Image (cartoon, rainbow, N blue to C red):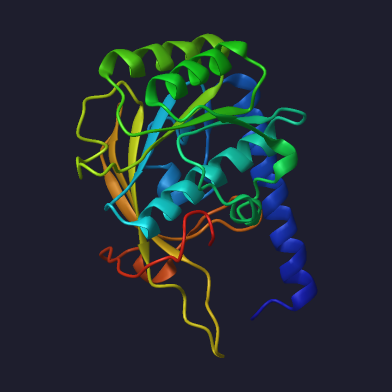
Length: 260
């Protein structure tokens, strides 16, 4: 029997409350931040993203649409961390001046929770990230780089452990065309995100964006991939039901970085 609108709204609110409690508990004990999707969390070592650890994300292709998807994927994670750690902010070290703040807000990461650091050069981004992680009072630290050596990622991992803060690194494609995840890294997880065709609507318009989400490597677990529906206004992803037990596919484009 289908749920009535009031019952469906109450159920949705209850689920959101449970997710918030789980996220807050993970933040308090330094454990893992779950996605709140059982099919994904049970495949992740520790049941979610390790809190005091470095995680890397890159667009699957050298394409602005995939770059936008990767940016919003990170923004959604950061939004849920900020919600779990009341009063804490997100430090975002920028590599380029093309971050679209309204897009981040639509993924749950409003300007009131963000501290921007325009440093541009990779080595300066890494230095700001390390300093922010050791501070220990931020919900998360995000940095945008093209390259990071194994030594640099090891320092970030140690700083994340010391400060009990999640480090999120956006590895961006450069003009050379070199795969941003080609270099070895100490990151606990490494992700590739590709844009896909949005969900069709019964009327003219653009539906919720979809992403082909690939966990390329994780410490203590196996890689996997899913077709996902993009972040909602609270930074939450949704599993594309049609592909929950079937093969993953992806195709399509987003218009600009963080504009979805």
